[in-house]
Image 1: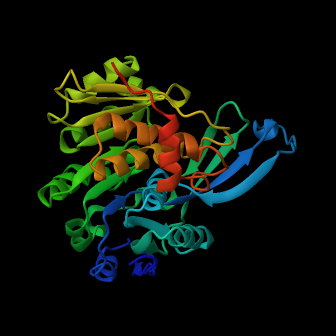
Image 2: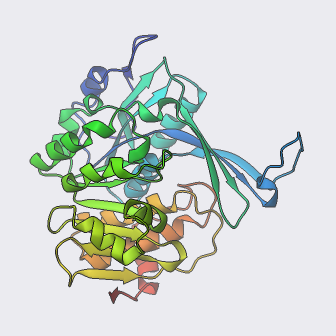
Amino acid sequence: MTGQPATGRAAPGGAATGSAAAGAAGTVKAEVLVVGELNVDIVVSGAGAVPTFGQHEQLVDDCRVTLGSSSAIFACGVRRLGHTTAMVGVIGDDLFGTAVRDALRQRQVDTSAVVVDPSIPTGVTVILNPGHDRALLTFPGSIGATRRDHVPDALLRGARHLHVGSVFLQRDLRPELPRLFDDARAAGLSTSFDPNWDPTGRWSDLLPLLPHADIIFVNEQEAAALTGGQAAAHAAVALGRQMRPDSTVVVKRGAKGALAVRAGRADDTWSVPALGVGVVDTTGAGDSFDAGFIHGALSGRSLPECLAAGAACGSLSARASGGTAAQPDERELAEALARLTTEVAL
């Protein structure tokens, strides 16, 4: 049952509570439960997207407001692939919060457990995309306000998979994530998370979470930062040593594709190339990759097949500006996989 109103509200001036959201979501059943941050992206594109200070005015090729956040982009991607999906997060009672909620509803992601907190503004990320790289400026706002008690037990018990995005930005949720993942595992769910970048530069805060999750998604830079500078394949093995046996470490490598290592199984290590597409904007491509991989896992696919599905979804999502505009459906994914045939055991 998608598109329900976001009814969880905090009292003015107070912290958001999960009770209203839990009541609203009590009858909802979603295959994939996504918990994390919600924000808008303001994407500024073109050669002039690199600013010059000193009150210098520059013209850019494009500027648009789109649904942002790793968690929401993942939710839209996995929903597009056919899985009923519910989102848990916090938004402010403002224009950007309304834009986030409406965008999720339009993409048939259930928002009944999204909490509206009038005491805090919705988070915003400004993405400067000159074409060859990206810079991100983030105003946290509500991004770090999600808590464990915002997650309705009914949603958790009714799902098959739990995913958490932008772990390093989850100020209130991060200390509670081991318990949330353990609760999910006890309820029979598989679990995954994508930490994204650590703005503090510490990285060590993530390591205690590794034994509690089934799948971790990182890119090459994040993998190196988490392992003292190790290259992708070695970093994946090192991270896998800190996880339960048969857990999975996935390293996304952009134009070089991706690799995956099954913890404790040296013979279950794979690499796939990226899919060749006309790249317009890579915003959210890693989150669409995650959605494709989890789609494969929920469909009973093998590790290399999941990896290929992730690589295809990540590549296809880069065909348009913003994180969700070009996410593929099942038919588009199947057509892409017919072209992405190379699966290489490392």
